Image 1 (cartoon, rainbow, N blue to C red):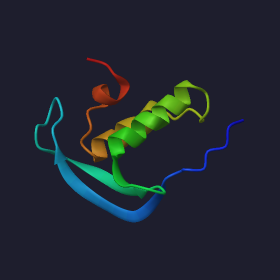
Image 2: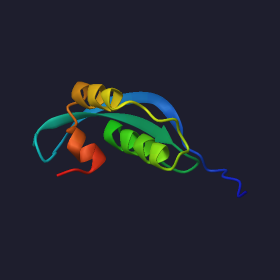
Image 3: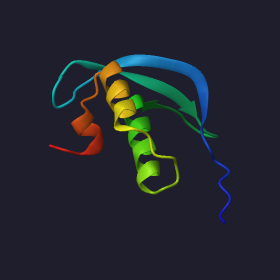
Image 4: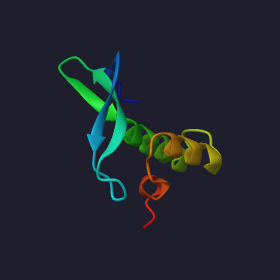
Amino acid sequence: MKEINNIADTTGRATYKIIPTKIAPDMEQLYFEMKDNEHVFQIGIKTILECILFGVKEKQLPELPLAWYTEICSRYDIPLSELIGEE
């Protein structure tokens, strides 16, 4: 197994930014600030949810009920259809 030695850690900062979505052009999204050995960057809650969903599909994370995704998406104004890829 290849060792990963450039893993990002959170800086403890989170911000809200306006980002466009298909449904709400002025939607606010929660972003977490991360840093690795060379960079400081932000990752949005939608990306984190997509990573969780990918992990579940790959059977690397336990399945979560659809109600959990619905509640989180509703809380952060993320259209569930954008997260799961439905049109």
